Length: 176
Image 1 (cartoon, rainbow, N blue to C red):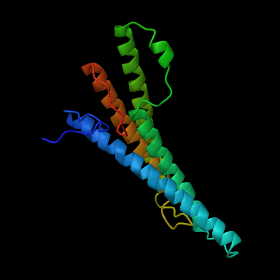
Image 2 (cartoon, helix red, strand yellow):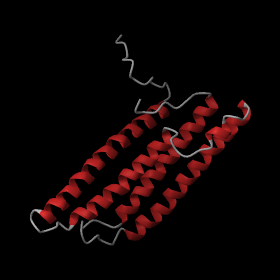
Image 3 (cartoon, rainbow, N blue to C red):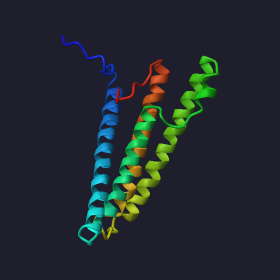
Image 4 (tube, one colour):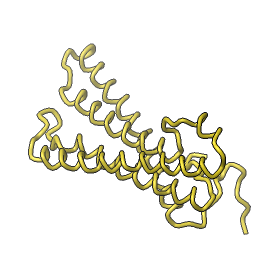
């Protein structure tokens, strides 16, 4: 039986936790690739403008599109890794039983926020799907689809945190 390296995160026996960890890691990879895409897009715009005196029209629209998705993935991963804004200093002062209840409430409220993102993002995605972006020739609804993806992941990761709290476990960040 092979021995796990010291840098490997412990493998959870729970399917849902493993699924969330894989999704979180995939989001991190997608965000990094998106950042490279932003860099390449802006670089193409600068080279086109200053070297060829002909700015490609699609570069700015693509960079903005990638910013939406990088942000969406980053926010979702931040929720899973408990990197969102919280009142950690006040919560740690509470007794254990009260602290757990407050932490569950915090994750439930974050999950509710994710659900609102899914709902409103889906409404806007459907509303704008038939309009085409003149620069990318893609549906404008793709902009709002990033809200649906982020919201869905936020809900999933919030549920994972609540279940882990109720089990007395801790969610290990996927990037460890």
